[in-house]
Image: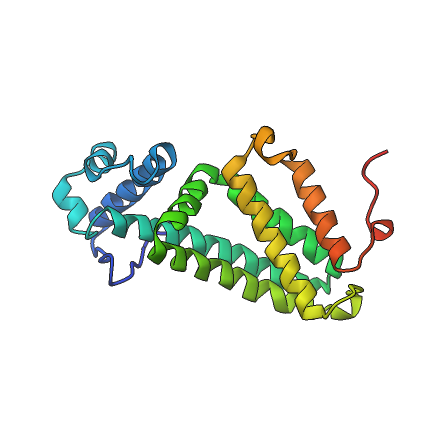
Length: 226
């Protein structure tokens, strides 16, 4: 966790003293665990402060309510994801990576990020489905991911051989990435629902599908299966 955490003014206040920062860290870490285990509705402020070993007053000195803390955690996780995507883009530009490599690394970055915090990410997606305001917040994050990856891919549009406009092909590829990623987060290891293998198999299959859509036909894709 960072030493100093800046909160949105509309749902939190940044404490000044070191002891207050430590209390904030405990509150956030406790809430992350409880939201992941019990979901949003199954977690109360009393549950959070009990696990964080702090007082209710200490909680409300930092957050208006449970929703404020949930938004803060969501925004923290989104900032980490955007940071990874930015690093991927910078690396692709520095190494003059091929479109195939950009696609492979983008898919892997999304799945590995979610895999490290799958239960918490699942709660974000579920909350997005029942809360219009939160859905808008969640959608903005994916919009940022898309807006960062799109120019990196379009910079290599001479490699795109799809039977459609390059921008349209890239946008659909990014939509496909998000759809399969969200589906895996929600239904991980539930093949009876998804009909898909998870883990590395899903990453490979999604990568191959994205490359094929961009016109990098299976013949140009490395053969993994014999």
